[in-house]
Figure 1 (cartoon, rainbow, N blue to C red):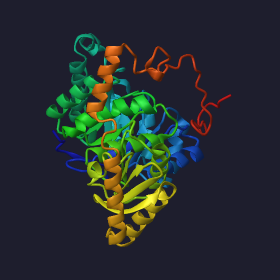
Figure 2 (spheres, helix red, strand yellow):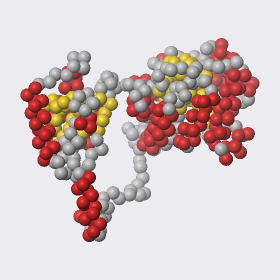
Figure 3 (cartoon, rainbow, N blue to C red):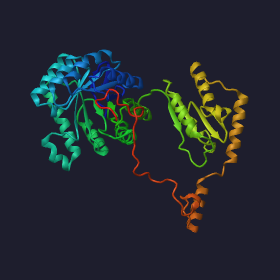
Figure 4 (cartoon, rainbow, N blue to C red):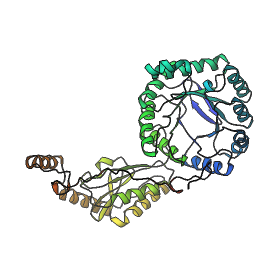
Length: 436
């Protein structure tokens, strides 16, 4: 269930029916002002509503005053163990303090932070992590990890309420996706406060994005969660923001920029769709309008599967069709597809979304589409695939191998390959280390 209470981090509302806020965390050494500010501006441009910075040392807390003053979005100070850094962060103007009441030094030190936070109207994010539960819950964690997580969170909520501090949001994080889902569902039934969602230490850009999408997407679809952070092992913090937005857009919780629809390709593909999709995706990054663009790899599916898209392409051999809202616009040579698509998009946006249709070109495109569909009507249908599999089974051939014989499979596992990341793929600028 959605949280009933609302807090404000800077000017961003969290909970109480406000849009789900997107946050990320800088990967730089916070005291390195140039690197930290560059990354904050980058994530803000990517759509981050909030940004968190690590404050493990005095000089990081000292840097906060400048960071807060120059940041285009509210700044959250991430505090572990040392409560005096939380006090310094509040004095520096941090818009929110993130801490774990269980590792900050006891009730008295938490109370100090709560008093100063109240004086400065600074909210907090309190929470628990599956890797740092209080000692008295370790035994329960071994037998009932979800119950242990929720118990710890509720205990911290009661601690803050006992200190007369209620300006906070709560988070429960685990690397285990099912446990995270179950724990946050249960917590949402027990507390009225906003809930921050995340899968902690989710993994790489690929695996971490998938785990986060499954875990956070499930909870958000249930109406649980008021702010999210995607935790990825990449120094490009903006990638976390991009994944978060794709989750929110997929669930139609928020809109930001274009939505790209692209078919997965198959044996019907007759043009270089990979290149076309990559170029379209790259060029769409420059648009802020919530337009929907579809790229279909063949005319067998035609435009019916993406008739709801604002604009799209469907291709065959060396030609393709530009369409809009399920209706053909014109037939175009493949090398002109992308440029023509964006000319149509730009013209539409300049006319307030109105699409201009040339009846003769539209009729020519529809006729071409009909011809292509007729020519390819029998290609790779489920019936044909079933017949191929039956014939292969009767002959004992392996249809997964080239030529259907005993050759090497098409997809061979790659083993023992060392991955070397360069500065472009994984920059170390602003970090505490360099890459040899």
